[in-house]
Length: 145
Ligand SMILES: CC(C)(COP(=O)(O)OP(=O)(O)OC[C@H]1O[C@@H](n2cnc3c(N)ncnc32)[C@H](O)[C@@H]1OP(=O)(O)O)[C@@H](O)C(=O)NCCC(=O)NCCS
Image (cartoon, rainbow, N blue to C red; front, side, top):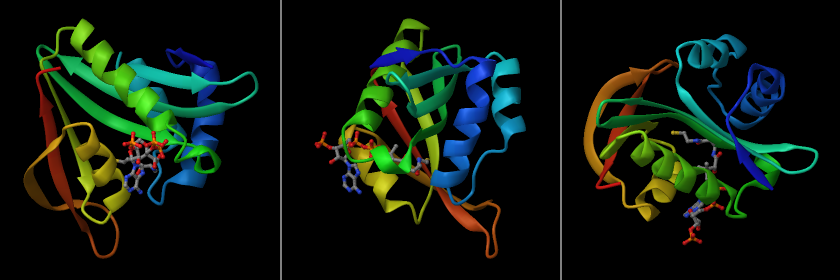
């Protein structure tokens, strides 16, 4: 199993997983723009498949987790942990001392996952997400990478 940077040639597979796994998926263009913007990425691959991925951005001492997803069939096997560990490590290497994220308030699974990594609940941003009705975001952060 390998953790690598995402390349443009991974984006078709990533976009397919994204659509299958997330109720409100990033579009293929969102991924392309993220790479074009110079954001950082991690892709977890086995011999045949992409199992999961993360996109994040480090600006100064702040890291921002933009997307983390493990393919539906592979969740609950420690792969999300592998990917997030690497995001935290890479963020630190790139100079970050804190990492921020937003998550839908209904996404208990992800909130539990982040709390296991020492993320704290900081604030609610009301009506942050599209949808009908719109949904609030929980802002979380972890200090001291
Ligand atoms: C959130 C997500 C990335 C977690 O990945 P995963 O591979 O399923 O998680 P792991 O198997 O690595 O679990 C890591 C830890 O989180 C815990 N965890 C995972 N899912 C959990 C759940 N539903 N409830 C409680 N704890 C959970 C695990 O118990 C494990 O803890 P442990 O190390 O003490 O055993 C994955 O579920 C996912 O892709 N969800 C859909 C996309 C999404 O919502 N992304 C976040 C958007 S902000």
